[in-house]
Length: 90
Image (tube, rainbow, N blue to C red; front, side):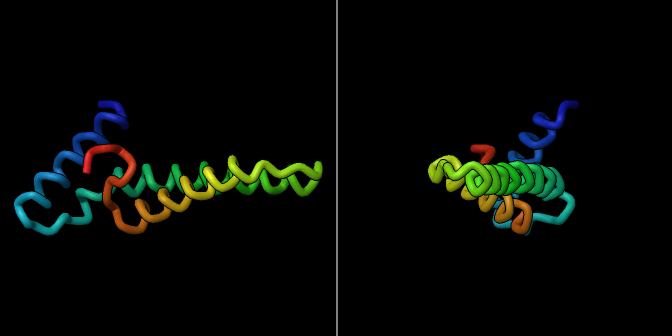
Protein backbone atom coordinates (compact mmCIF):
# COMPACT_ATOMS: atom_id res chain seq x y z
CA UNK A 1 0.00 0.00 0.00
CA UNK A 2 1.34 3.44 -0.92
CA UNK A 3 2.06 6.09 1.69
CA UNK A 4 -0.75 8.24 0.29
CA UNK A 5 -3.25 5.41 0.81
CA UNK A 6 -2.06 4.84 4.37
CA UNK A 7 -2.48 8.53 5.17
CA UNK A 8 -6.01 8.54 3.76
CA UNK A 9 -6.93 5.37 5.65
CA UNK A 10 -5.60 6.83 8.91
CA UNK A 11 -7.43 10.13 8.34
CA UNK A 12 -10.71 8.28 7.75
CA UNK A 13 -10.12 6.24 10.91
CA UNK A 14 -9.47 9.41 12.92
CA UNK A 15 -12.66 10.97 11.58
CA UNK A 16 -14.68 7.88 12.57
CA UNK A 17 -13.23 7.94 16.09
CA UNK A 18 -14.00 11.65 16.52
CA UNK A 19 -17.55 11.12 15.24
CA UNK A 20 -18.01 8.39 17.84
CA UNK A 21 -16.62 10.68 20.56
CA UNK A 22 -13.66 8.42 21.28
CA UNK A 23 -10.07 9.43 21.91
CA UNK A 24 -7.60 8.96 19.08
CA UNK A 25 -4.82 6.58 20.18
CA UNK A 26 -1.18 7.33 19.42
CA UNK A 27 -1.05 4.45 16.95
CA UNK A 28 -3.67 6.22 14.82
CA UNK A 29 -1.54 9.38 14.61
CA UNK A 30 1.61 7.90 13.07
CA UNK A 31 1.20 8.91 9.44
CA UNK A 32 -0.18 12.33 10.32
CA UNK A 33 3.00 13.02 12.26
CA UNK A 34 5.23 11.72 9.48
CA UNK A 35 3.43 13.87 6.91
CA UNK A 36 3.58 16.86 9.28
CA UNK A 37 7.31 16.41 9.82
CA UNK A 38 7.94 16.25 6.08
CA UNK A 39 5.80 19.34 5.46
CA UNK A 40 7.54 21.22 8.27
CA UNK A 41 10.99 20.31 6.96
CA UNK A 42 10.23 21.23 3.36
CA UNK A 43 8.26 24.39 4.15
CA UNK A 44 10.64 25.87 6.70
CA UNK A 45 13.67 24.75 4.70
CA UNK A 46 12.32 26.42 1.58
CA UNK A 47 11.53 29.62 3.45
CA UNK A 48 15.00 29.62 4.98
CA UNK A 49 16.57 29.10 1.58
CA UNK A 50 14.61 32.00 0.07
CA UNK A 51 15.61 34.29 2.94
CA UNK A 52 19.27 33.21 2.70
CA UNK A 53 19.36 33.79 -1.05
CA UNK A 54 17.60 37.12 -0.54
CA UNK A 55 20.26 38.25 1.91
CA UNK A 56 23.04 37.13 -0.43
CA UNK A 57 21.65 38.60 -3.64
CA UNK A 58 19.75 41.58 -2.24
CA UNK A 59 16.27 40.51 -3.39
CA UNK A 60 13.77 38.87 -1.13
CA UNK A 61 10.53 37.40 -2.35
CA UNK A 62 8.39 38.05 0.72
CA UNK A 63 5.29 36.35 -0.66
CA UNK A 64 7.03 33.07 -1.38
CA UNK A 65 8.94 33.11 1.91
CA UNK A 66 5.78 33.82 3.91
CA UNK A 67 3.83 31.13 2.06
CA UNK A 68 6.48 28.50 2.75
CA UNK A 69 6.83 29.64 6.36
CA UNK A 70 3.06 29.30 6.86
CA UNK A 71 3.16 25.87 5.24
CA UNK A 72 5.97 24.90 7.59
CA UNK A 73 3.94 26.17 10.54
CA UNK A 74 0.96 24.05 9.52
CA UNK A 75 3.31 21.08 9.24
CA UNK A 76 4.61 21.74 12.75
CA UNK A 77 1.07 21.93 14.14
CA UNK A 78 0.20 18.66 12.41
CA UNK A 79 3.40 17.06 13.72
CA UNK A 80 2.65 18.07 17.30
CA UNK A 81 -1.10 17.37 17.29
CA UNK A 82 -1.07 14.21 15.18
CA UNK A 83 -4.26 15.28 13.40
CA UNK A 84 -4.68 15.45 9.65
CA UNK A 85 -4.99 19.19 8.99
CA UNK A 86 -3.91 19.44 5.38
CA UNK A 87 -5.15 16.22 3.81
CA UNK A 88 -8.73 17.43 3.41
CA UNK A 89 -9.91 14.45 5.43
CA UNK A 90 -10.81 16.02 8.75
